[in-house]
Every structure is written in structure tokens, then in C-alpha cells.
Image (spheres, rainbow, N blue to C red):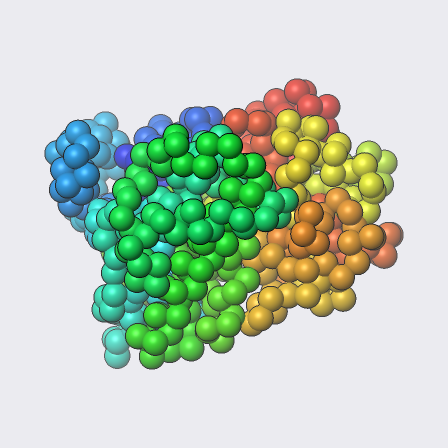
Length: 491
């Protein structure tokens, strides 16, 4: 029996499949196949690829309950589309997959399962913070496995629409001229350049900050009269500070309500790696699944169908470019050109490139950051992440409390030697670190060879994509990137 999880209809459609032994056979993003960034609909390529791994009968598990979403739309005064799960998925796809049965799961519960059932924990307090589910915007759960090994969830707390930290951050993203539900990560990067001088103005959106009670519905953004002449960097800095305060209120409440030293954190807000540095002030052990947003909920829905702990090994779960990893050639390319692309093996499941669909560069040159930003057509203030051999991370970075490693770029760390590695240090002296342990063969082998030749244990790592498009998925995408940008891409 296979358990197929699907998320689609809003943004970042995805599909995952788990077999009867709890192995993740495949998990991929629709946008990588359709080439439409944040594609909300299932794509033919995604489903066809998934079905290559479906060797048995399957059930479908959908990541939310559409009728409850319709209820929220009604409450919000939006146009209501009373769709069923079958209509959301589409007749053609159902005829292709031929499921035995279709199940719909609670949106925040799908988030919770994506985190808890892939985590190393047998019990945990689960915190979900996103823009909006059906009605929940924040939820806290007690999660554990029963005597038969089945995952059990008990909701301890929730905040309903429109009391949403995610919608607040998206509204501030729109305020500075960026695209909401897309470019929040840019707002996070901008915050380092400003001062939080508008926090008082932003707190006027709340009746109670500590209880996350809004007096304004920010679903469609804030009024144009709000801070009309404010510097956008100061707005970003203020928004980040307020968001961190709100998150800390939730995490503190979770620590009080739960009975575990283990935190599982999910929802789109969990991608805010700047805020994540504070999580260790409350919990001893922390797991953030590397795809904590809605796309990752496809895996969560499948996990709910399976019911037990899922065997998580790494995030390389998508489309497979079947070719031998050419670490010697990549190192030679780096020594010669300083910047190379890599498209090899299975694509990352999640928004961040981790070595299989990456643009890599020597982090030591003063000019490298500007060159890579120019290649990717990005704003010059945008930071880049270092990927580093795990055993050297403490020599070069001060990791935040309780984070000894960061294999999925989920926290920022203070760089001890920004003078040596200017290409991977942000304006505030921090870096979004990716550590590589000995169980990661491709990028690990490359870093080891790079270190032997250069005595530098790290590289600059950013996603291999054309501006405005998703990450490279297949070899055709890699060839197109190489042609457009003149950067050699190794497969």
C-alpha cells in the first residue's frame, strides 16, 4: 500500500508518496515541472514522476479540508468556492492515480505530522505558525506515539483567523514593495539594514500582543496611509522585531502547555531563520522539517495516512538527474572560475538548495557576492549562505543556543571571521549556515576535496535558478541556465 499526499489549490502545490514500510519514495514541487513559480496547481510532470514510484495500490491524503476553507472564506467576506477534495485534485489526475480512497486532513494537523513524524523524537510539543489554514493561524499540539507505534495528536491551543503572524509579516512584505506570500525572505534580509523605529506604530494593529489578538484584518495588506513616508529598511527591521516578539510569545506558551523538552516547529513562518535563532531559549531539542510550509504538508498528509514514524534520511526526494557526481571536475571549475553550478541526483524537497541544485562559489573573494548577485539578477543587499563541513562550524561561526548543527539552513549564526569570508556574511555579521555531516555524500565529498586544496572548509551556496523561476529541476533546465548566464553547470 502506498500513501500519496497532495497539497494544491492555494500556492506551492506538491505531492509526496510513502510506502507501507514508512519509506519516503518521492516528494516534489509542482513548480519545478511547470516552471511557474509557486504554482498552486498540480502539474502533469509532477504526477507522472510520482507514479514512477507508486508500485502498489494507493490512497490519497489531502492536506486540508476544503469545506472548512470555504467556511473561512465566507467569514472573511471573500467569494466562496465550495469545492470538494475530488474537484480540487481534478478528475484527470484521479483517473491517472486511481486511488482506492481519498481522505482529507486538517491543515495544521498536516503541518504537525510533516514535522513530528519525520522528527527523531518519540514525543514533542508541536508549534504551527503560518498565514492561515482552514481557520487556524497558530496551533500548539502534544504529539506522541502510542504503544502500537501510531502517532497521536492533541491540540492544546490555537488562534483563529484573522489573528495571524504570517499575514502580518506578509502585509509588511507588501508594504515595502515586495510580493506577499513570495518575497518574505527578502524582507527578512532587508531588516539588517534598518532600525526598528516603527514597532510602536505596528503594535497599533493589536488589541493584545501577548495574546496575539489583532484589531485589524491584514489579509489584504495594510492601508496605504500606514507609514507613507517610512524608509523601507526601517519598516523591515520593525516588522522582524515585532514578529520575533510574537513568535516568542507562542513558543513560551508552548513550553508552558506542553510536557516535553522537544520542539517540532512548522508552518511557513518557520522559514524565518532569523527568528529561529531564539528557539533554543525555550526548548532543548528542536526539529524543523526542511519544507515546513504548505508544500511540505503533502508529506504530512501522507504521513497521517501511514500513521507511524516516517523514515527520514535527507531532503533529496525529488526529480532524479541520474549521473555520477563529478566532485573533481567541480573543484577544478571552482579553482578556475570561482563560480559553478551543480545539478545532480535527486532534487531538494523544500525551498532551499542544499547541494544538488546549487550555485556554488568561493566565499573568500571581495567581488564574489556582487558577481553571484549579478548572475542571479538579485538586489545587491541580498545575503548568501555558507555550506560548511560540520566539524569546522564552531571554528568559524557562533551557533545559536541549542543548535549544534544546521543541515537545512534553518538558523543564522554570527561569523567569527567575516574578514576572511565576505561573500557569505550579511550586513549584521551573520550567516544562514548549512552544515554538512558525513552522511551527505555528494556535497560532503566536494567540500572535503575543496578543503584539502584550499584549507577553506566552506563554499557559498545559493539556489540554481533563473530569476523569477523555480530551481533547476532536470538537465534541460541546467542547460538553459548555463546558456543564459554563462556558468558551467555540472551534472
